Image (cartoon, rainbow over all chains, first blue to last red):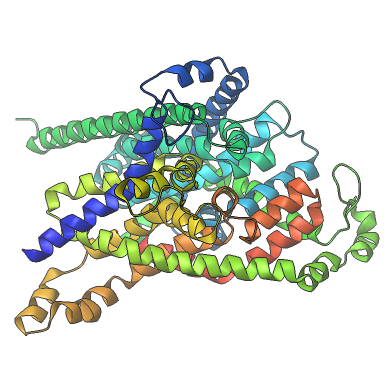
Length: 272
Length: 305
């Protein structure tokens, strides 16, 4: 029993370490005072300042569009890659393929960013919105591939086999059977891809061009000038959005899971 | 059975099957592998005052002779000659090694406590570890600036509880200590999750047997729990060590002028000095240093999959 109390203490300390800095950041976004250490009372002033900061709002709009586009393309490519890894056994160059999926996960961002930029320059592409989208798609698709792969590995193939045995064409089988079953993982992958794109400073800094300043680039340039509650306000909104997104995604995943279990149960009972 | 299934897979849907592999494959070849070849090529070219600021190394096949004659290792010689760069590499590896060790020290007890928690609350605990990871890296590093600044919250706290006089201030911000705190904070979920998944799978009867036979808990931990969690330790250590070595944001925002890290050097060469070939050479050497850890990581991942 002593070890239980010990575990509880460790977990409390661990989670305190993880959450206290974020909570402080949120609390101080409502601080009327400009100083971090002085509590000047509750105020929404910094949110107003932020709202009227045109540069910041433009950056937020760019970031949202980059995020949606790159997460969507990345999810399609990542799901295909996961299917290739799990379903297609051996194919020429499989070693290289799985290497290309795993390496971007740990590759230092400065290397990925610089190499991408040099590719765009070599191809003679003007840097800007689309180059950031391509760069983000490339590294987020690998995360999607890992998430979807783990779902495919624990996946009951009997329904799929039944459809194929009954003469359903493979592409149709994929859309009517496989995709609905792996959908929670695909959605989770999209969410992860979107947040990764939303967060990225280094790769975006290398691959962006005039007129395509993303929010992290904007925040970074302001942070370098010093801490202001205005940044806390943007950060709080971002944290809020992501938290709501994660909660919604987990609820919808749970709901599909419940529905799937019910359907399986009904199917098992069979027509009587 | 699996072989038959695979053979059947091969037969079905030739074209769609081919596309499933080819589309992501070509994308990654074009946008992940080709850039590395280019970075390698440019690292061998000369700096020029132009945009792009390097001499073109390749124009058409007729120029292969010129191409080869233009290549030189000037940038690499420059890098190895200048003690500043060598120090930056060594210092990055040092900081990454120490931080990985600190992460293990902090992450292991958390992962172990999670794995020993009742099954019903484990998913919630996992969710709580993952949630901060969804918050922007930049935001989490920024949060520490407000805490560690000399006139920040840590000073205020220590002054309030009386551990520090009103005139004293915490001198952590813009030092290596702040960098370590920032790294441990940002990478903790990456360390805890692989450790947890290794520890959770562990067979508890082994520990019970050891206990029944009179083995003290600490010895049982070192002889049974720790060796069995080694795959998780290796995975977590690699997932942290590799990106930390090239880390830019944390040393830039929390570190001091004397905090040397190669990610910062590369950034300065590129954005500050606009020396693209030299920045490329810095990246290539960093990649060479990380080849072995990346291979270990890849092998580990393949075993898991």
